[in-house]
Amino acid sequence: MSRYKAHVVSAVDPAAQGVLEDLDRRMAAFYNSNAMTQYYAHAEAANVSWSEDCGQALIRKLASPGSRVVDFGCGSAHALRHLNDTGAAYTGCDVSAKQIHANQQEFGAAAQFITSSLYGTPFPDCVFDLAFSTYVLEHLVWPHRCLAEMVRVVKPGGFIVLVCPHFRPRNRIPSLFYGSYNAPIRDRLRQHDYLGVIRHLWLRQVHYPSLLRRNYPPQTRPFLINVSPSCLDGDYYPDNDAVYFTYTPEITAFLASLGASDVTDHYMTMHRISRRQETVVVVAQKRLEQ
Image (cartoon, rainbow, N blue to C red):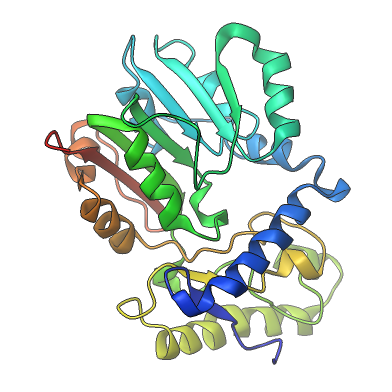
């Protein structure tokens, strides 16, 4: 396979499940490697601020006193720091047992933490008022399974909130291969690798968008996954471990098929939050007849 040919599959394609299972194993090994000891600290640093006009502000608005909220992919529990004055009871779940233990040591009885796959949590049906994830969905091999789990654990009338980058409309993702060594443009510039900068820009802006538009239309390839993320073949940098080409229409349509109606526009208008082209923000409410 050419290094300049995107190797992508649909997460819902039965024929692709073997490839996806292999990717899931490799990503698990990547996240548990010694090289990733500072991963969650870096993730938290990028999410320190929850401004009033960002998607995360909706999580604060919906975390009412006495409500139960669950953070899917909690990492270092940076969300808890923004919610500890809301009066909501916080539960964080994450696949990293080491990070969950660190959270338990830091926060003690102030919150509950569970080590769990996001595709199948130990929570009973319909126990939370709010399930949310921030910058997690793009890292999942089976994003639709996580969405289904979030709907399952939320009470009828409860909310699901998702915030993540918006990759599919631009037909690119940071984990695609962008040259003989995969590094951000700023690093190439520091090394005076101007040919590498040109190659990187051509692949990112021209080659991959054209290839993906032509061969992987959203209508026939939903939940598109990059099965050869560059993080597995070089140094890590932010989001080169993202594998899902996040796409708002398929996320909202899938949630609706599970009984969670899209109410994003209503809540964004109510709280004066504007849409940002580069960010997916979805608010869905589980229907009462569930």
